[in-house]
Picture (cartoon, rainbow, N blue to C red):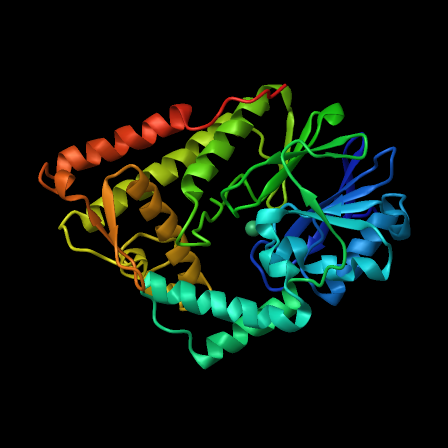
Length: 365
Ligand SMILES: [Zn+2]
Ligand SMILES: [Zn+2]
């Protein structure tokens, strides 16, 4: 019977489908690059025994011994990508690379990790105006963080332009997480996208810190960046769902989704009342109703997503932020006076301008 675990997608790259237990996403696509300087794995998969066995089997089916791996690149810190990194040292002394901005959670020691997560989540909730975490949620979080995040001994920092082996180059694509990276294999005309762009699902874009960054702006910049790479890169493969065939049109769809989200936020806030991220998130439209989202973790992802859009509008100076413990946003008074349609037009114009020229032009050849 033909194998369904490992499939060669380009001359140097094999895709390994690593199952994610109980998830509608079903798999993380882990990529194995057969580099002349030693094979490199891109992402690992969810920390689960069966997933681990599938990963090892996939590597072997691709004709590589796991112990011969030279390195492991993690596109970002989310557990469906980083989870099995914890087990890599059992089979090889390969280095493990991740962008510095995504290392905060993984770098905390195994003992500390649940404390680090708990403290961050509690502070995050207070500032978002969300209810305190229940004991049950805290349990869930600490379990989560211990199980999923992986204990890593040896990090290698990845950053824009880092070369890995002979064939791989890091392309920073922040937004889905602050340190999200894609991996370019020019010789194969291939870009491995991680969770940056998927053919059907719109990746979550969240605030991770209320004090710095503009995640939606970063995300839009990263989308424009891969759109510019598309003409010279016939193959764009994310870590879920399947290849993105028409990158420019998919990018346009995702950009339009966020533009719509910004307009929705303006509508929620146009009565002039200051609101928290939690209050705002509850009034936006989600794929399921707010009540069905439940509390953890979907509602918290929704707060992060609302937050990313609030911060973006704040930077456009359409919103004004107040508060230090719990943050609130309202329409900036100068705009409030101009009324609803002027406000919506300014939102559209500001976002459009950003989507036209929101990033530095780099050398994308
Ligand atoms: Zn992710
Ligand atoms: Zn993912």
